[in-house]
Amino acid sequence: KINANEFTIEWIYGKPMEKISLEEAIEAIKKIWISSNMVRKVEVRDTDEGKILFFHSKIKSKLLDESFCKQIKLLLESNYGVNVDYKLRTQGYLIRILTL
Image (cartoon, rainbow, N blue to C red; front, side):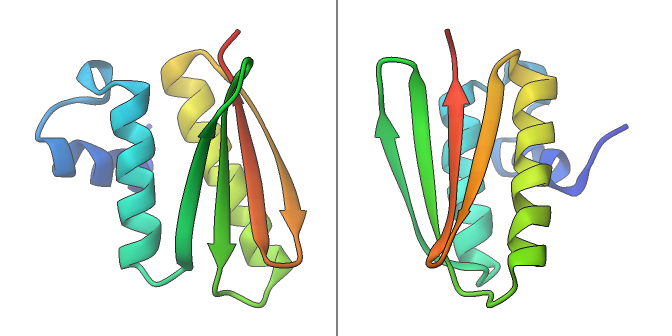
């Protein structure tokens, strides 16, 4: 079953998810979230364990922000064999991608 995020990422790159790298998927997620006016910006930081994405949310709803986190978690875990956790913050949400 494909979700809207997968469909959009495949459309952006013109290839199936199996051929899209984790880095490409992260860049596409940034583009999707910013262009859909859900966030002001997305910061990506590399760590020893993987990556941290901080989404500066424009939405004033923790419920919606949590829903977005769950969508991204499902997308990344099901396509890239990574573990993902998230935390809601006052200014947005933080997603940790653990690649080890």
